[in-house]
Length: 176
Image 1 (cartoon, rainbow, N blue to C red):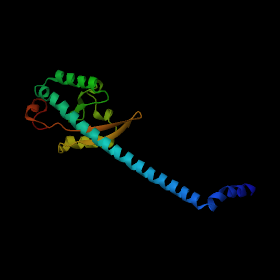
Image 2 (cartoon, rainbow, N blue to C red; image 1 turned 90 degrees about the vertical axis):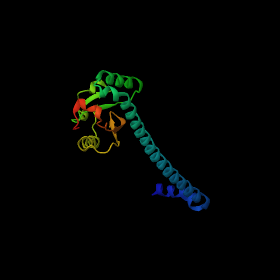
Image 3 (cartoon, rainbow, N blue to C red; image 1 turned 135 degrees about the vertical axis):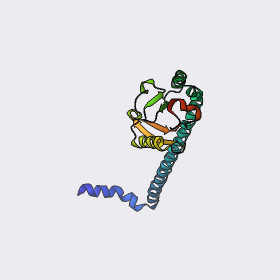
Image 4 (cartoon, helix red, strand yellow; image 1 turned 60 degrees about the vertical axis):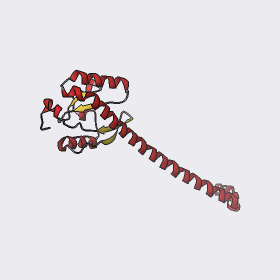
């Protein structure tokens, strides 16, 4: 019981001094407010970063498509492969794949991925379901983004569709 008495004697100055009580309450209050502000800021920053990365994905899709549209229309696969190789060499950490209606990769910045199913390297069930729905239903040309973590690194996957235009029909017909 002597240990308990010593502890109470240590708390005596706090119980006796109003200024010290106010200081402790203010310190705790400021710490809580600062914690809330930091938490909200981090949440907003993550949201903004994700939005920017999604915009980057949209721009990247548009640029990649602009570069391969003509070679695709004339069936020049070698030019498409060269474009993707250049993208891989210039934009480290960025990967682009184009898959067919069976989710088999036809073109990719990483040539090891060609002729493999998308599911071999995208493990997000939501992303795969969204891709399947997009390919089945031909939903509007909007983008869908998903976060995925592999080997301790986070990735943002954006899914886009390339509309079937008149000049594309030589590869897969007018019905797709």
